[in-house]
Every structure is written in structure tokens, then in C-alpha cells.
Image 1 (cartoon, rainbow, N blue to C red):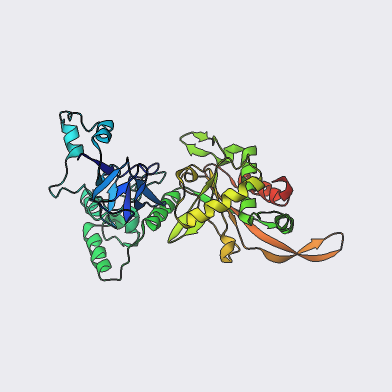
Image 2 (cartoon, rainbow, N blue to C red):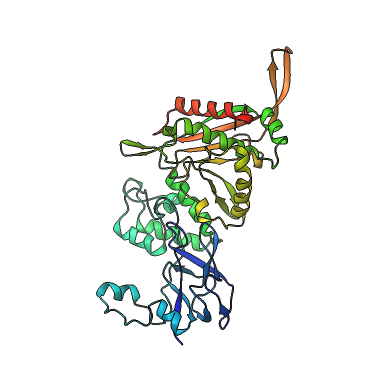
Length: 397
């Protein structure tokens, strides 16, 4: 019987590969079109590869814990002659050109070409480097080992002007081999690379204490109850809608304004952080955002975020107060200008003019970290003041 290949699909924008983590069916089983066949993992989420049509699983050529590029053949499905005709498999193959031979040529083993796990799905290519001068020989050696310029930070160079030589590099690698090593997950590598690229910009942070009593009273009356971070996210979205330039990106001599106020929020997942996105957060009231926010938090923790809930956000909110932290300086993502942080709430004394005495009130620090090329301290301070003011008027959110 004719057979059609099971192909590694494009699982999301800029995702070039995925690792096989589980087979959901066995060879010989009958499957329906669209049925989940293989569970795979990218640096963003756990997803599935589905059957292209009904048929019987002939075999899987892919292996558990191996990574495969988009377009690689993962297995085959036996199909009827009618299905094969529908897929055009009964037509004669076109003559091969030099380009098509390169694309279709398989290794002698018969297996699809393997790729080593790399960082994908990021706004800027993960292999972008920002190092000082490196000799062609050193670059070739680093490429061979899959290392970037950031990995040289721990090497003291012995060359001219402190340059790292190939000999310095080889000593560094030899020393690493003698130490305990654990494999970094693809998510950890992705986070590290994103933060390295973010740090190439001039970043600054401003902070502001905000009284939360009104917010906490409003929250008690809500069902379902929004978390403090969602109040901060909604306040940020409203403030950005009033002046979108502050969320713009500097590209050359132009500020690129966002076309939509899509705001992300940081969720701690296993060995890293994911950033689900609430689209059009300025156009939806707090009560309409709460259910979706809670859904995305759970999906992020399971690493099963849908494609429409990742990427493309103009700013991020992070609640570092959940770790008992009062103050922090989070770093904006490479494609963003802003990240808003919320610290832990504490009872603090505030002067009450009417009572003529100090009274205890719940207070937390807001921090705003920003790309100093786009915003100055004054503009950042005014934006943070506006966010704090909105959070103290929760009924307007």
C-alpha cells in the first residue's frame, strides 16, 4: 500500500525544531486525520504532531529525546490509493535540480538529518553575538562546540589587549571537562540568550511605593478574584493606551509605536520563565481579563501555551513580590522597552491628616525598568505615577 510521511510541522513563529518526548500511538494502529501522534517539546511549550490523514501507522523513524528540524520525516502512515492520490503521491516525481537534491538528499543511514538542540523562537536570532575581536580560528572552534561569545565571559585572555586566544579557550574547555556538568534545558538557554541580548541596551529602573488598601478591598468583592499582578497589568495597559510612544521601539531614527497594547506577564515554569500575553489589554475591563489570565497561568506552568498567547507583546509585568522580594530590577525582553515589577506588600505607617496620626496601610513598591534610549527618567517617572494612580482607583480598571 502507498504511504505518506509524518512531517515535523512549523509549530510556531521562528520555531525551527522540536524534541520528541513521547509517542502517543504505536506502529500498526489505525489513526484518524488530525489525531495526535507524537508529543514534542520546543523551548516554549509542549505540543503535538498530528496525523495528516486517516490510515495505519507504518513506522516511526524519529527517536525519543532527539531533536528534529521543521520538515524532517518522523515516520510513515499507510494510506489508501484514494488518499495517496489526494496528496498527489500518484503523480510522477519532478526532475531533480541541484537545489532539490540538496533538500531531499538523506544520509546513508536512511534516517532524516539530525540537528542538535538550539535556541529558537526568539525575537532576535539566538546565535547573534556581541563579542570583541575573535580570530577566525577561534570562531571556527567555538562554532564547532556550539558556543557563543557570551560563553567567553569567564575566560581571562592572555593575548594582546586581553584578547582571548585559542590556547586560552582550549585550557578553559579542558578545565570544564574536569568539573561537574549538568545539561541546561532549552528553556534555560533561551532565557539566558534573551537576557544577554537585552543587556546590550542602556537600561534603567525607577521605583514608587503604592498603597494597596483600595485594591485589596476591591479584590474581595470580585468573583473570580484578580491577583495584584493583573491589576498592575491592566493599569499599565490603560496608561500605555494614553501614550503609546513610551512603549515604542527605537529602530534607527524612528520610534515604532505598537499597533496593539498586548501585555505579557511572567510565569515561573520548570527551569525558566514563560511570558503569556493578554491581547488588547487596554480594551478589556479587569473582570473580562481575569478568567483568561488564570487560564494562561495554568497553561504556562504546563508549558502548553497556545501560539496566539505568546510573543508580540509591548511590555511585561512581573510579580517578584510572590518570592517575598520588596525591590528588584527586572530586565525587559529584547523586543520590548518596558517591564513593570510588583514587590511584596507590607504594612507601613502613613500619616493621616484627619486623624493627626500615623495609621498602618498596605504598601508595595512598583518598579519600572526601561530602555533609556526610548525613555528618560522623567517620562518613566510620569508613566509609573500614572500606573500607581490607576491602581489606587481599581473601580476604574
